[in-house]
Length: 389
Image (cartoon, rainbow, N blue to C red; front, side, top):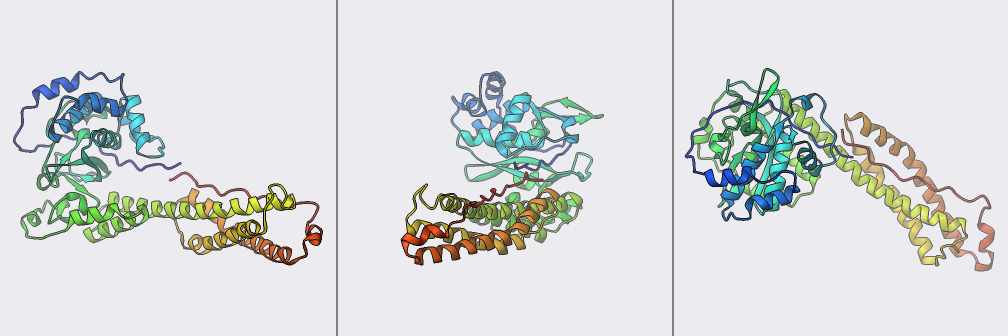
């Protein structure tokens, strides 16, 4: 079970100045789409079936979410565990409420389902009073006609007043240009500013936006494209490197960095577990057949050798990666230490069986049955992957 981190922020009202397009017809139609009859994909399809442009489709989904999902202020104290993005989507559709991560995941899921190029961004913000939030936040970005824009459905849906959520639509966070949005929302990873001259955290905190007028040429699009070709471990490692280069100035970003480091440890452990279980499966298949004198199932000489060789190689392949993994997650360390403790015995057992097989295959076939012990051999239990912190 993997819990996806949810970055939470109390909702505040801010102000932007931009040209307002008349979306009256789209907005009115979107508000009428029946909530209870559809999955997220079906809702998105119903919202956009008569629309043609990417902007219109994004608008319909934005309006539907901001008018149907409420912010769950009480959830801040007791966040549920999730296995991934789909869990966020399923939860928010069932409860009709959630926190910023639910809003962002739902918008991503719905827009992706109708072919829009959208993203989830995580970072921290400045509220309407100019204060830096002490907790994280999640929002969306979308690419339309080769241009990037930001959307914050959470902030558009309502706000918190005196520990109570007030549903109040504010049409100020739809299709905001990066150079404007970065004045109140700064991503942890600078590539998601979508700016050729991304500002640093210290500049954001001090409201110093002079860099926006510079002539830098930060290749964010190239990095995003290259990022897609990397596995999740490499993606997260590169994200951490960019975060550090951007300057870490607050507790929220340090927590994100620490979460990433633990996430990397979990991903690496998961890879080791896959290899370990491959070794165990080969070893157990070998042991099961050996207990039946290789008659049930009947294995030829090459199959016997292959099973024990696979087990030996895979067990040994786990040794260094297990030793290299470190984490501050208590639950992960329990599993990690358990596997570290038993691995030497697993390697020893597999190597002993490899020696047995070498002797067995050299022995004259009529005499091979004398090599088996009557009590048999015990199978090894598979390794487990623990829930993500």
